[in-house]
Image (cartoon, rainbow, N blue to C red):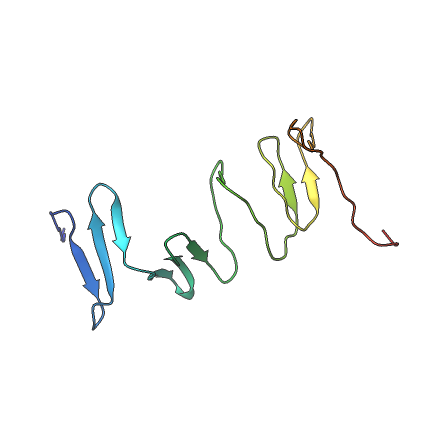
Length: 129
């Protein structure tokens, strides 16, 4: 079995004629792809990229599939684009511009959080609605 080992923390592998892409070993943390470079799959349309210091892009032409028992979104959750359906479960709230299903054996829709502010539902339609 052949192996390539770089047995010192902080090793850097550089790629390209002008060494514009580097992969750095970060001790006890993992691997670092420099700057805003992309890790591509299949072709240029599928990639993971640190687009800036605060934004991580995961891109695909058609679909990104997350397979897990639970997907935990920490922070704001914004759905844009066409959405075919949205499910609200007992463990969390999801909103989108689409049909909405509240599922479970005892579904509950809560408006407000018992704070001092008023809570309301607004139906914003037209004369035909």
